[in-house]
Image (tube, one colour):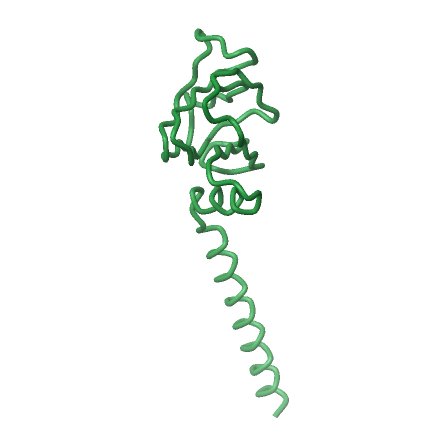
Length: 127
């Protein structure tokens, strides 16, 4: 009788662990666009750019808003290695501060995403 009880407890623990694993996998499977849209919605914004500190939309996410119609250079902290652009404007990214053209690492078109800039390059400024 004890063995049946132990097997039943083991089965319940395995099912709970498997269910937790499924929920974790579902959370990780959220697309970067969906994560960005949710972050903008949480801020009562429709347009914005979401940046990740690591390639492939990993690491800390930063949300940029209220830039429509400007061509000002902004410095990024932390630096960014991937981006989702949920705006009507193209955005350009540069290594280092000051948006220096010779340090251009990539552009993200309107309503598109980019899993990395130049190989292992981090953007330190944008416009």
